Image 1 (cartoon, rainbow over the protein chains, first blue to last red):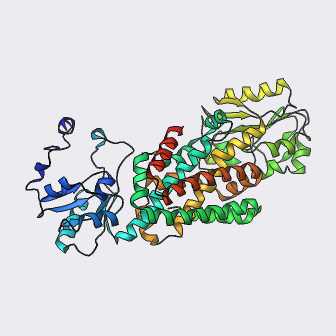
Image 2: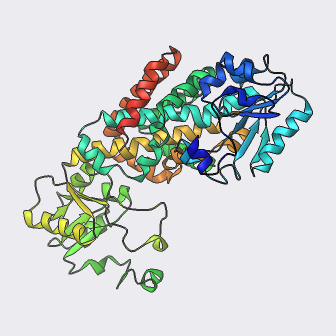
Image 3: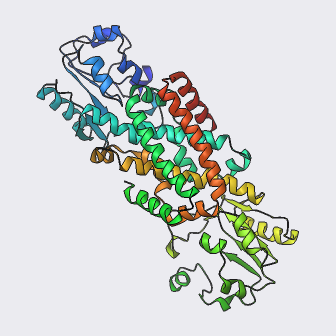
Length: 237
Length: 237
């Protein structure tokens, strides 16, 4: 708290929930499990007249947990961040040019949605709006499932021999491919837990694609493999 | 050729094989397929008294193709390079601090191995020496198989809906994980072809690791998943 004040990140800081009294806009930047399973004390401390936004990377279970309790809750997913955590990781312009996703369930007022959009715009983000279920499916494919794909690569390489040689030869390509798999394990597990069905569907689609490539290797279909790799190259954003 | 001379990359350049006449040291920097299946004209043009090194990323089939033909062939894998290709991609210091792997089969003279090492050292590389089969297994795990893992991710994400949203939300994590899968398709296919058995073994080990993570998601074993991700994080080089 002192350090956040010192760095000028905040004007006021407190871990006392009574500080929420009289707030008109609350942005819940909490670990995903506390968004999916809200603490009773926090629910009670939030003024019912406040507009409340969250920052969770999964939206359906968050909306299901909060909207019945808070009439002005709007689901929000600002997609910015670094590999760092903690108060020292706060940097100016973090949200600049990054997606700021709003996921209306249909219960929100147009005025509240407009305020959620305006907040993202003021931070320089690119504001997007989509259905909560579509959001969860999309992040399963581009974020949650890839964590597992990348982690499995680390695990299989770590079990291979000779280990010393593998480590000596691992290059920037391997480092890139394993970056997200070597990230925060609690977050990786939470994302899979809170978005389980979409992650399972994404894993099934992924396994099928990998299995097809493995079959091409086994069947020595090098023309087919090269075509498949060319199609992968073509779709890389 | 003119451009290479112009850039000062070479003192002389020619596509006429007769330029090999009288050469004492030849470094074969050729596409992998031309290293695995040497062209007869090249084999004939190489002076039998020359020390010949290659740069292929697979070593057993290259050694099998060249050593019976050339008494002084030494297998070599300088692990440097960029995503760029062609004469404009040549940069000073490319090999600085990068692995320069020599893979003796046992047929080489100590003097020739020493010369191959000295070349790597002169370029500022870290010279390593290992068995050709061990080399091929190691690169299968840290380079060749990961290309397929990464390509499958691109393919499965490209087939998911809604595609526009996926592309809008794909962030640096997705870009990192799919970088090598979106690389040169001809090279990716060639690496799998020339190192098929090791790539198949690596794919089998990888699929097993991913399957285990998928089982944890399906079985909702979140403690186990978090532990698995923590172990992955711990082994990341």
